[in-house]
Length: 229
Image 1 (tube, rainbow, N blue to C red):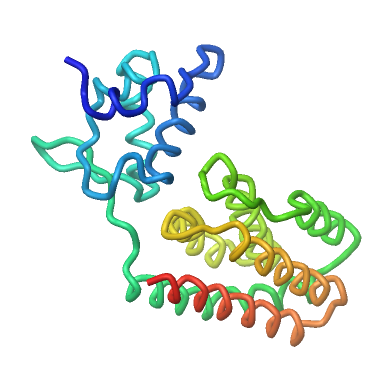
Image 2 (cartoon, one colour; image 1 turned 135 degrees about the horizontal axis):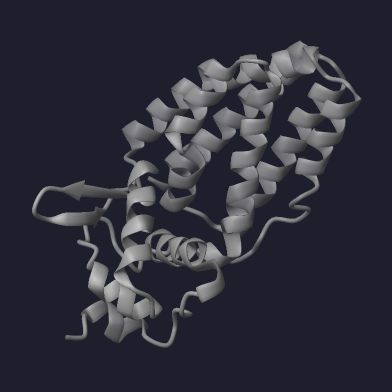
């Protein structure tokens, strides 16, 4: 029996490539969630998704398990998987409160530990996304979302604190914030500009300036997201 999802999207969603099956299914299902094709609270029909992507149910089940660990889907006994709710304004504020406690400190420590190798890695990440995307679909913005996650993870790593890095990684904050709202012209340009200011301070070996730049970036990003709510 053909589901409503299949009727609506058949022909618009590319079939998963067999050569990289699980990774391709992962990106396809994530796209459905990030773009809102699978709305918050919607039950995920494994059979329908498998037919839509022209794959067996096995990789779909594996992908849903991975997405559960990232908080994009939830699993309930006897009901299976459903798409998780987006963050509320209170959850956004709480998430940024945690980040404001950890990441400015991490940026300051990174500035204290800067050397030629660190400088090369930070510059390479900054230049990995030279321009902000203008589209609003996951296909358009997933590159900057991945950069945002890598950038903040790199600063946490360079702080020398595995505990801070692990704490930030557990939140999957970049994924959930970009899912909440992304408009390329609104978020992308200021995000890249703020990252550049953090990098300048870190590479200058100035802990105070690096801490201030990261704090300013997080506060501005928080306000941009809260405005959408």
